[in-house]
Image (tube, rainbow over all chains, first blue to last red; front, top):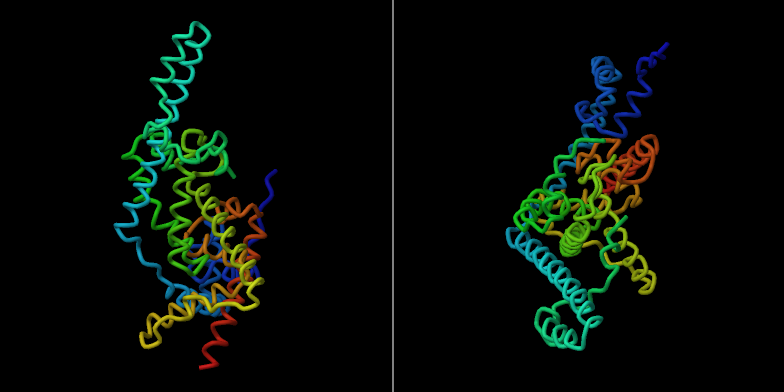
Length: 139
Length: 182
């Protein structure tokens, strides 16, 4: 047997208006039908009227859309991040290759030096990146 | 599992698709910027928070897994955490200086009535408890559902409704007091 939810009373109606404001379409969907029935009563209208007055105040706080330049800066920063990610992959691939070379012969050292010159611009671009940074954005 | 409209985009970013990144920035930047602006009342800090949030998205996109929460809810939580970092730093700074600078919003032009009204609401929002402000920003301004907002805040829906109601009552009292003082 399923338990029937009790119909909403004016107290619950008031609590929902205090939480979600005076526009019933912004209330949780499961409460809207009951709420519309109570909104037609005098007490319901008074509650919604007070909540709508505060909503109107809140609506005065508009925030400007971001400037196109900001969109560009954020994308640019992100593209830099991707480029670094790709270079990291290449770096690790090269390191593995060098390791194999070292294990095999002294000639491997020469290969590793050629692939990973310390002063190469790509390598310098790593900046302060260290293994483990990937995780610090995790919640 | 919930349907997530951002899932394909996030997966593409995880594969290194730069065009997907631009689309995500265009889609989400206005929302993240608005959230940070209303939490911090400072446009420069809000831009920093939005930028940092996107950097974290790039770093984590490859490991993103669709689950019980949508990506949009996740980035709201990331941005909110970054806002709290800044609020904590401000609190430390204020304690060390023994003086609180007025919020920038309160220094707005007084001869523009619309700007003055906007500034009053911004000031009132800054004056209420941060958790109440967070609940209001997520539900009223960002239009997250009660379940999404509660998940982003790590509280129950009942607790969220309590924060919302107390926040709205506090805002109402501040706005009435400001009006009476004029």
